[in-house]
Length: 199
Image: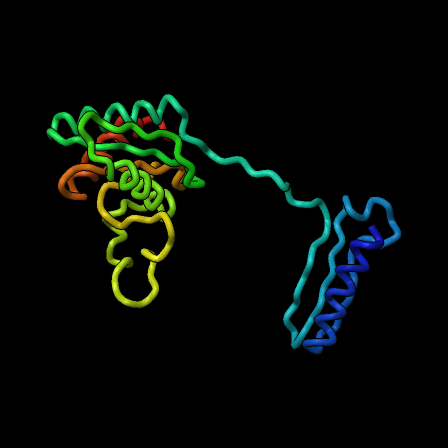
């Protein structure tokens, strides 16, 4: 405990040297064993502005995130292939998780060899930016560095994010139709198959 308070005090003292800050220690006494539980407040003032650092219980080093289930991924892929058949298109569907890892790739009968990579990159792009790939193409043009320079991205229509709790948890990518707009309507059909189950 003394080390934590000493470190924080030293940090504030360093501020004092750099910015003319006056440091004071308030709250629990450093020597008290329960000070960490009670919390220690270190305050500094500069020109009437207070800067406060609160020591106490450490933030959790673990976080939880929502993940699309395997059953949901299969349901999406099946809906995509059914919609593609209705539209007489030969496509591949890819689903990636929030980290961009591939969860599923389903290549429809007759889909070209390029469709797998196209679908995966569209799914990656959609989950990365939390938007349909067709909405992102405006930021992917010009000679200056732009979002299209990010490896693994593809800014053609056909990628849609799967959103739960206001945040993207997966991406669906479809490749193989003659236009990105068609790919995207097929991807939307896959998303619609699980829309009521996303929380």
